[in-house]
Length: 383
Image (cartoon, rainbow, N blue to C red; front, side, top):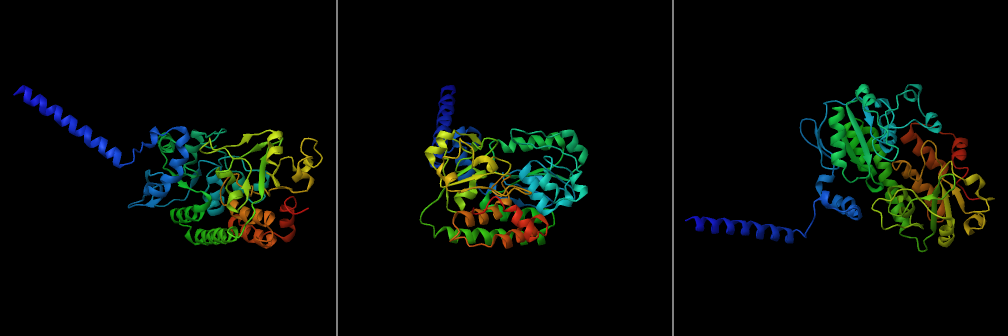
């Protein structure tokens, strides 16, 4: 009898093993997210989001939500005070509900302060949760007593664990709303519903959707791609690769980013050499604001590049936020109109004074004069 039972036990284990192997085979041999290597992160954050419904923000019953990375979070019945986990969320909350902010992720720039009432300028700086300069002050966060901490942007590896940890340490609900260029309108509608600001966010979302569709139609007519180098920093040699959330605007309008680094799942700013830029020989050079635009024309290191000789170099408008993607949020919506108009003026025939005034009123709650717009665009028009 003992031998029989022993054989039966072995047969049962064998059966379980066969079923497990078969299931893995039918499932394509997929690995849990936690086991995916560094080089596979792009596949997780792009393909999985399209097929796994857990990446879609959902409103459940009794104040619960399922955020964009599948975390179930209980929220208070009414939200009146918001803290942000990073700069993209800070910018987005400024455009949606500035009066709800209890603090800043980072100190507002002087250009942003021009658009802020005094009570917002003087809010405490709580710090950011992600990034190389992450500096969140947990004590200050708890002291501010927000109803919720909001993070928006790109899905990062280990984000579930990270945000669960932040929530546990502060005892404040934390939610994440994905906001890539293509789903910016969805993010606005989600936050509008969450914060009871749907009238304003629906108008903003409609503007975003209309802009993206218009640009897509125009992009289809482009035959010859213009190449672009996108630089920042004191040397102008920091750049961002095609495929990065910070550089989406370039490819979205139908241009080509000269820097491509397939080895990185989510490329960050990288230092490149002047020799490499010369090899790329971009048609257009684009600098972020506060870079070397003002001196590059006479700089012996830069002046021999063909784009510099042809006066095809520009500085992206940066007030109150850089139009190309720093931080990467709704600022890119006006950015794609501006960059399209600059790079392909015969296709993107926008009146940028009119477009800028409309965008700033809708998103930054500011009525600009024609002179203010022309000052914004002074370094980013044809010479």
